[in-house]
Image: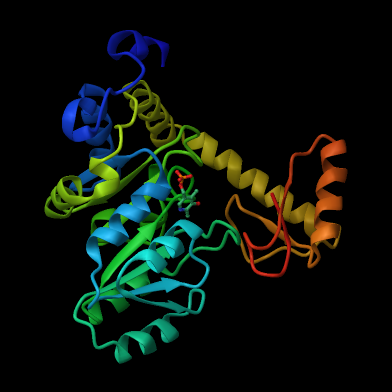
Length: 301
Ligand SMILES: *Cc1c(COP(=O)(O)O)cnc(C)c1O
């Protein structure tokens, strides 16, 4: 980071459309295109703003948005603020989604799901979502904030892990702040979609571009994620050990085989007490309480 800060200065100096886009951003974009096999990408300072940008730009009053009930708050909030109609389908329930789609009279339909769910750690049935979207002539967007870098061949994410390729999904979005350990986000799609996004989306146009030094750091993180398979192997080993020990100690776990392993405590006070006790033992395990999750409290590992 210090190397690039010397070269470009830390800040980007303005919107991507003014002075904010330089070589570091171009290199990162090209790297994402080749790593993930996507046609074009748009960079954002956060996943929150990427989700706002996409949903608000693409959906008008006469359109419909269908979201998995457990989608991240940044997606839900954008959906509530957008002028379109929004409906939520039961978590990972393709039959319910199909039912809602069959009733939808709107021509433009967008389905959104996370790849790996941020609170429960389970995975979306991406190939079934893709098939449903195709047969209903709907667009599909996957928010892969918790999949990129940790699942799929070479860390290419949830779509790849589901047996498809990222290009099969019209809108693929992921963040650089989770597994990649930096910050920021991108949206990938066809060149046409990305041109439209970068020319008309307000969160993209009216915001200072990602610092180039940060774009450089993200590039380094992407290279590590792509090339160092042993990190994913190690993670799988740790997840298996955690699940085995939990089972041996009769701690009930959810149906997750990813790095997100919730333990449902059922009571906020107890949840915080357990988290504090673990902290005293040197383990940083966050208590997640409503309204971040529904009225059942979780301890987040
Ligand atoms: C963290 C997260 C976001 C928000 O990304 P930020 O870069 O933190 O704004 C969006 N979607 C999901 C699923 C996330 O887990």
